[in-house]
Amino acid sequence: MQNIQTIQTTGATFRALTNIDVAVLVKELRQYVGSRVDKIYQLGPSEFVFRFKGLATMKDLLIFLPYAFAKIERQIQEKEPTTFAMTLRKHLENKVLLTIEQPNIDRVCIMKFDGMQLAFEMFGNGNVILFDDKGMIISILKREETKQRTLTIGTSYVLPEMKKKKVSAEGIKECLESTDNSEEKLVVVLSKNFNIPAFYLNEILPRNGIEPTKKVKEFEHSLREKIADVILKFFERVTSGNVNIILRSDGSYVVSDMAEAEKEGVKVFNNFMDLLAEVYKEHLKIKQRSSRYIKVEKLLKKLKHQEEHLPLLKNELAHTTEMAQILLAHKEIIEEIIERYKQLRKQKKSTEEIKKELSNICTVDIVDGKLLLELTEN
Image 1: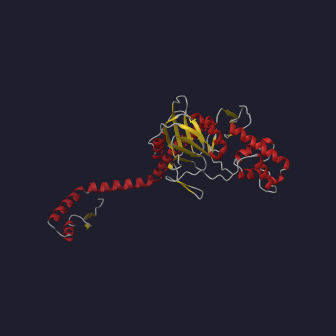
Image 2 (image 1 turned 30 degrees about the vertical axis):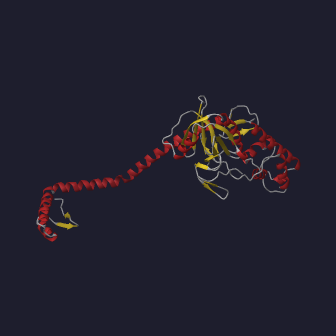
Image 3 (image 1 turned 90 degrees about the vertical axis):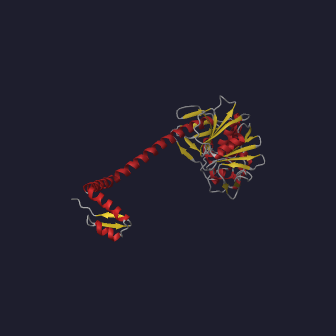
């Protein structure tokens, strides 16, 4: 079952992409095929912008791992290019984008250029891997070592292991037959065995009169064919691009195979990348507000710290003032002792001899070559 991560924004909620979302986005991304890469920017640890030549009217392509592919206005705020961004520029700038694919209908998007390929993995925290046509990794955003694969420079790029079955009517019916007495919920069985996320099963099954949280054993045999048919039709519409992109009043958004008119609480987008661009704008607003809040919070903490230490500082000031008054009152004696001390040192007198002579002026001690004077307030 795919874990749907979220980032809360005002009005919309960024969630990690499912394989269904990636399938729709890959179709939209193909509008960039045939274009030449102009510039690549890295705006943050997980944010990249691709600018293409010859597309004056087309917006830049934002990749925000693992949440979005989106079209954004040409406003770049890159400070110093990262080493990874510079490597991508070196190998990809001025190259033509040849194809964009989604292997295994997974949460992976691969852009193919002449001699180079770039994989965007939109699961977990996301990753970007640059590899050549032989599969050798040239550069990688985050190295990975698991039981299934090792991703690091110099190794071969290996796609994430796909253990789930492809969606098919026969496969779904056979799965439900084999789990006939299962105590597990329908949504759990289907998402565990097939490459379709629970997020979308919970979306498409209820509106077709099928309760996804109902135990598999409670479904009549006659309903199994309907379940398979509903899921298969949804997949066919997604892969053909015949879908609607819906943003709801609660901030959630979905790829829908049902026509849904724009109304109160529902906004319909022409494409997924435009919706994600809107969510990204909200995300930036929250980020900016959070940044200002953190700065104010730090200043308040500093002020509180200063207020707490104010009595101590006042005591220190009072003590320093008192000491200054004593020194001023005994200025002549102090100058006389210092001058006499220098003379006795030149005469190579011993410490005891110096102390004895200086004591005629005031009480004196000498510790580690330093003069200690006992001065009274009067």
